[in-house]
Length: 628
Ligand SMILES: [Cu+2]
Image (cartoon, rainbow, N blue to C red; front, top):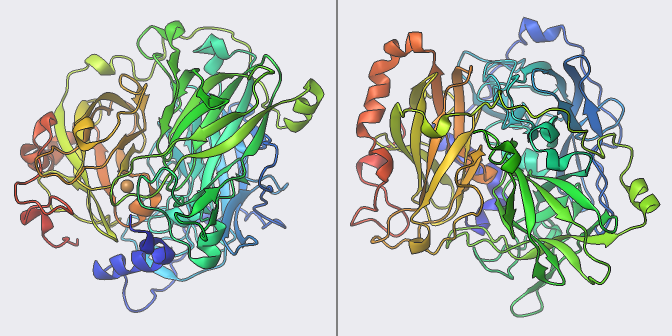
């Protein structure tokens, strides 16, 4: 995205909403709270919210909460403050002062989250049509909040993992009851706010935490009893961007000024640019991660950043080190089709789109290693892309046992449990690779720089996201579909499907566009996948990925698929799908058929011959958005 967009993102969002006719001239009346939520006592704000560590600090484990007797009860006060540079911080605080704790549940548990929005009202955003959800009703405001339980295969209905219409405004309280399926893969998930238009600001501010479905040691015994590190990468504006308006480097510049400053467990890497140099030189302050000599640690890494794409590598004295991949996006690799115990991958780097997770086994450096680091490598984001340059995240420091134990804090989740049983009969996605395909569809990322972003569906007019619009796609519960997701823009985009995982089948047309396929993901079950940029050459087919989408779960209802660079999502790059039970699918046949008949199966498409270099829209696709 153009760097100039970000300094006035909220204005950009507002202008999109106004252009789309979604913001009336006057603020609408406050909607009365729903009766269900008024009975829930509010969670009081806590003092000194959203604390941050100094750059270069030793990484400690986030606080952890565990379910008991099948239920995890959590109380959150959603709060905001500003830091020393004037950056807006956001966080979920518990009454005892824990910030964004790691939530540990087991398959089959219920996660009960009571959240009160204790942030000040910052103005009206738009009116949501009925049916509404939450105490805010139709009144969507600039500081509304809700919570998405990212990656969980849970219900998209109101009171569970619903994000389109759930609104909690200043002083209001809402209670979630999220039923974790008995066959939810054990692994790393996360939670974050998901109100359209203000999601980027909330996540940049740090309002996110890890969600662990426990028991991965019983799917992958190699992790049994290892020390586990919950490592949450977030991002935020750099100090110089905040204080001086310093813009980012051009997309793909390996030594450029980063679009966002990366943090690890709330320790900033403190990107600092010397602009007196030509070209400017940016330096970083890595955090410190302690390991014991000879130790293998289980790193459970969540890219909880709003906008930053990561390509993680462990380096000892600048030499890339192989590591074992245990799980991706919460699902142990190779765990779903009967080969669990063989399920480790060996990689020397791993591409982590925003919102994706990877869980890896890393060996401590030997005593002779002078510099051991976790770095993120430069991302080729395209000519319209953000700059995600080469940079360190933390240095590994060998520590004596007592020191390391102290630094580990008393989070209670320092170690993985003991292997007890290999479960071979509850694989949620078993058989997905060979299931008959009910439908093939083509969806695509497209954009009009700098502020209009589309999650398009082939055969339908491009529209920026509108929460009041009907679903663009209707699918039938119990089926499997094959989707091709194309990128028609000249910057990378990151595909996320709510409520379900998909099987990554292939990464297509990457090399011809100068893009590099991501390692380790084909054949695995993901909820995030990156589709890199089209190079703009009309002779080159668009980059795409082909996915098997799994609608065989219990969940029916309305939910979303979108780009998880949240700046793009806020500017419209999201769309709605409805999954209907087979019994009601017949009633939906007409609308579904319309979408399918114009989709071109899995082959994807090529740029139109006369396509402008800034995109590939046809005249019909550029029709004005149709409002309901
Ligand atoms: Cu995007």
